[in-house]
Amino acid sequence: GNSVTQMEGPVTLSEEAFLTINCTYTATGYPSLFWYVQYPGEGLQLLLKATKADDKGSNKGFEATYRKETTSFHLEKGSVQVSDSAVYFCALNGNNRLAFGKGNQVVVIP
Amino acid sequence: EAQVTQNPRYLITVTGKKLTVTCSQNMNHEYMSWYRQDPGLGLRQIYYSMNVEVTDKGDVPEGYKVSRKEKRNFPLILESPSPNQTSLYFCASRLTIADPYNEQFFGPGTRLTVL
Image (cartoon, rainbow over the protein chains, first blue to last red):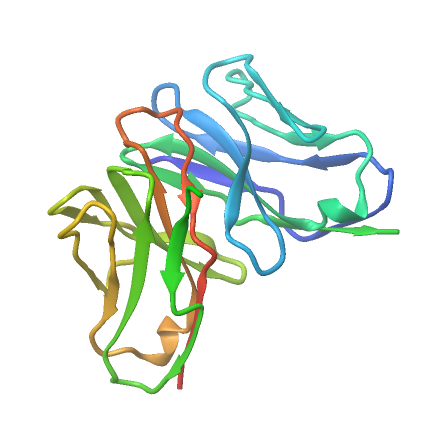
């Protein structure tokens, strides 16, 4: 079945550092891929998406490229801010549902 | 404002006392869903509904019931809550599951504690 795997553990980094969060997926066909962000005390909100191979989703300085050959959709940001501290979820759409990864807590220290 | 609302936001109850968490969306979405979020397990889908009177089990449906009598509402019912249902619950909706590209909107969450 469809599944999403995110790298283990929280990510702690300093302001203006480069952020990468790895996401790989298993799916049949060509699913749509998403990154959602959850700020403290809030629900999830869509950060960016990509609908086909080699598509690049981008928003708020974050980017992710749909890599079919490596079944990956890694999230990157060149210079993080304290306000980027949140939990980030990778997700794919298939079989009448969104399948989510376990999420990564990102803590940005001033 | 387009939104998904949930009530209550916080609830502490005791084992066996039936409860309902309400969910409502004002976007005329066909598809609605319930998730629970637990540390180390991420989000797991409980039930989903593709339209009025159409519901189906997600990954962790045991101990939960849902109904979809109107398009805007999708309540989650715990007939006999147990401590292992202590969790953070999210309702979500999207226009239709038929379009794989459309965005799913989430409610603010309900933190449930079962003693």
